[in-house]
Length: 187
Image (cartoon, rainbow, N blue to C red; front, top):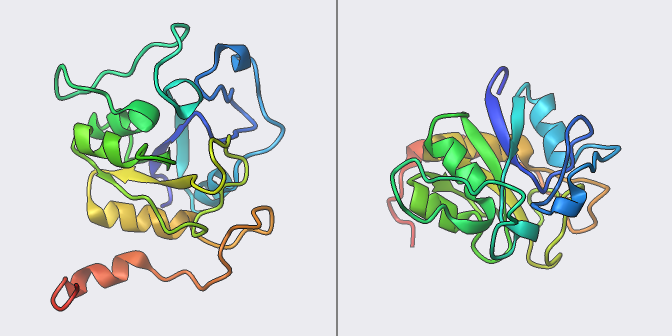
């Protein structure tokens, strides 16, 4: 992912930028460390362009202190929680973005913005340094313009993290390698 521009949802801690979670009361909060996903992207060579807006606390409704992201395809719903990530990806402002999904927050923005959104298997991607909504349901995953791009990003951000006790200790495959085999026989 060397040199690839990525945007991240403003729930992920970044030590060089504000992390608000869509809350006005956190407008001046700069964490002392990065989320594991940020570190993994940077280790893979990605360039973090900036943070994307979201609904307040990753729940329903936008705080009036922040602008509501606008769907690039017209007067459609922006997609709620990971809306800024879905919109930035759909508009071509980045190669891909990172969103979080507790109850549809990657999947809905992917749907309404016409991009690929992937909610990974629980524990595949570390949640360390991500503002929590519901720890047993929170997932971190990519939003991209193609399935292959989603597979590349998922490979980069997956893996065991000793800082996240729920992260899986498994060998991470190259998810894009299996794309060429097709879906013949898959049920």
